[in-house]
Every structure is written in structure tokens, then in C-alpha cells.
Amino acid sequence: MTNPLDFNIANRSIGVTKPPFIIAEMSGNHNQSLDRAFSIVEAAAHSGAHAIKLQTYTADSITLNVRGGDFEITDKSSLWYGNNLHQLYSHASTPWEWHEPIFNHAKDCGLICFSSPFDEKAVDFLESLDTPAYKIASFENCHLPLIKKVAQTGKPLIISTGLASIAELDEAVKAARSAGCKDLALLKCTSSYPASPHNTNIRTIPHLASLFSCHTGLSDHTLGLGVSVASVPLGACIIEKHFCLSREDGGVDSAFSLEPSEFRDLVDNVERAWQSLGSIHYGPTDSEIKSLCFRRSIFISEDVSQGQILDESNLKIVRPNSGLHPRFYEIVLGRRAARSLSKGTPLSFDMVVD
Image 1 (cartoon, one colour):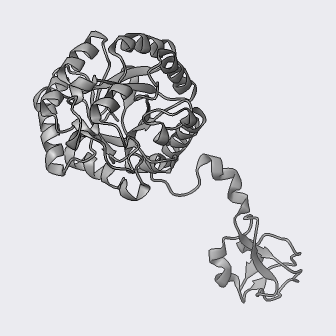
Image 2: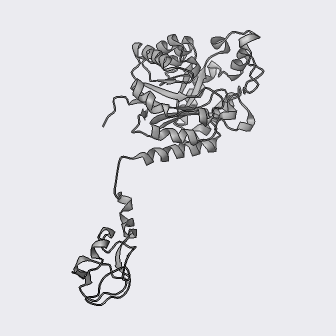
Image 3: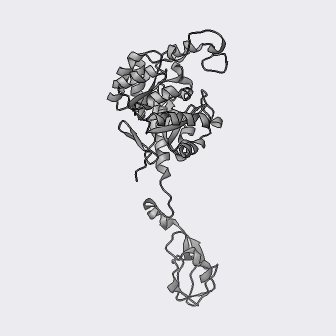
């Protein structure tokens, strides 16, 4: 049955009845090397990712080149402590002239490639590359003009929810839909880097789906795979994780990014989790039929002669299941054997008389 909320990103169908769409976020982990960006694309494809995502901005499109005050990152626990915002975004940005070759290389590797724009000019630029979808980063979900600009393209739109209240998300969703967005997904996101499982609150995922009548997923900044895998039974049909070649090599987001072998584990475990959901079902499945023989049933446990009373001394509920169902045990107790029976005989009603 077709779900009216389902949509496609390029050749990939997005929906709860489809395997989750898994995005490898490159961010700035290319460390300002195009060759490294190409290697990340290749490794993501080899690791089983369905898409690679970029971020399209310049430092000047995000912030002002100002020192001091709120423009400085003064939190000593931050991965980016000691930088000002302009320095951070200058180092983390993906040069715009790299986008087309990365898009083309991703296509050659069998990956869908799209990006998060951070201003309206970035949307125009990504349209020139015929991006198949857009992602609004969590810090940008209050940027309603940007959301409207993206929505006007008619492309699928994914919005991360981090930091936004329900009222702010309602504003964002209404802005998107009023501007023409038909294909929308919201990703539960905790905007701390790395995020702790304790503050990830993935029970929000089905609530988002119900509240905004859209597909949902997870933008996961936690370490490891557990949170992403746990999101699948809650209805996550999109999962995004940051990706790097090696955390030891550094990179703006490498500390909370998955390496290729870990990402392969993510893809495999998410697929298994999704497959395990199945449907509501009781009784043996086709694959379990052959195991029915290992259930218990009633057997003669000691030799009995004709007319002998059947009781606990000569009846036992054991494997295999070729005798009477255990539900009849109390019914046959105290009755007599219709004929002589040897130990190991599966009991049937024609062996019992009053």
C-alpha cells in the first residue's frame, strides 16, 4: 500500500516501509583537500552509504569577520575552542568550485550527492548542479527565508530539529509547505558535538511524525552506532552520521564521525534492525516450521501394561512434540492404558480408556 508521505531522493524511495536512507555527512572532514574529499566519497560508497552530503557556505555567508565577544568560541569543552566563528567556518567550508567534481565523483561511485545550503545564494548555486534534495542544518531551522527559498525549488527537503521548540518547528514546517514543499522529512537532532545518548531523546521521532504528518529520522552526533540503530523501530526512515577516513587524521568534525569500517557496521545493523520489524505476527513463521518438533508433548516414560493407570510415574511432558499436547496432561492422568505401551511412545487418545 502506498503511503502518501513517501517520496524519492534521486532513485531512492524514502518511507517507513523502505530500508532507512543512510547519509554520510562529509562536513569539513576533507581538511581542505579535494583529493581527500574524493577519498571520502569512495570510502562512503564502499561502506554502503546511500548518499554523501556536503555543506554549502562561505565563512562570510554564515558570520561576520569580527574578533571578541560572542564571535569567539570560549567554551573550553568545545571541539573548536580558541577559534572565532569566521576562522572555524573558513577552515570547515567546502570550496564551491569543488562541488561539481564531488557531485560527479559521487555519481560515478553510485552515491546520491546533495548539500545543506546556508544562504539563498547557495540554493541558486546548488540548483545549477541539479541537486536532488536539500538539507536544512539544525542551526539554520530558524532561517525562514532560506527554508522558503529551498521549498520553492520543489525538491525534497530535510530539516534537522536541533535547538528548535515545537513552535519554531511549526514555523519552519509552515514556511516550507506554504512555499511549495511537498516532500518533507524532519530529523531529530541534538546539536551538541558529540551528543550524549542521555540527551538524544529519540522517543521524539514518532511524536514528530504524528505532530507534523511527515516522515522522520535522526541526525546522530553521538559516538558509536547504538542510537542510530535504536531509532529504526521508532520510525526513522533517514539516518545521517558524520563520516571521516580516520579520526586520528583530525578534521573539524572527526571526533564524532564514523570511520569506514564503523559506517559499514552502521549500514548492516540498521538494515538488520529494519528487517526485524516485520509485521504483527503470532505462531510459527515459515522458517520456524521445522522447529516445531522441539516443542514438548506427552510421552510414555516407563513401560505400562494394558489397563494400568496412567500417572506421574509413567507419563512425562518431554520433547519432541509427536505426542498429545501438554494441555491434555491433566485429562489423561488417572485413566488407563488401552493396551501395553513401551517407554518412548508418544501418547495419543486411542491409547487411553476410562
